[in-house]
Length: 99
Image 1: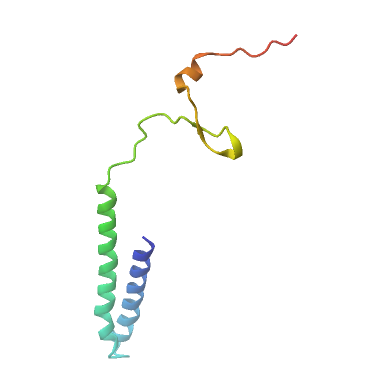
Image 2: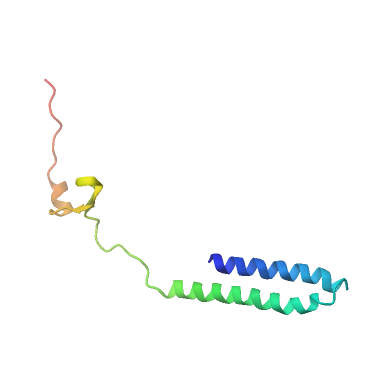
């Protein structure tokens, strides 16, 4: 996406600068830059469209099961719990009584 943005910005900058010079007859060579800037802008927009189509063509990312990972363990490494989530939440512990 960054490459496409840079291409589009450079094409627009070239076009605007060349239009000022060419249309006011300050520089005849500026007419030769206008088609180059158009091709740069067209390439940027085409690459953006291809990227957009490729993004929409992918299947969506869906979480199909609940996460069973925890951060308990050595050095912060992730370990998988052995009991399912339902088993962990089935027993309700009462808070300790104060005497």
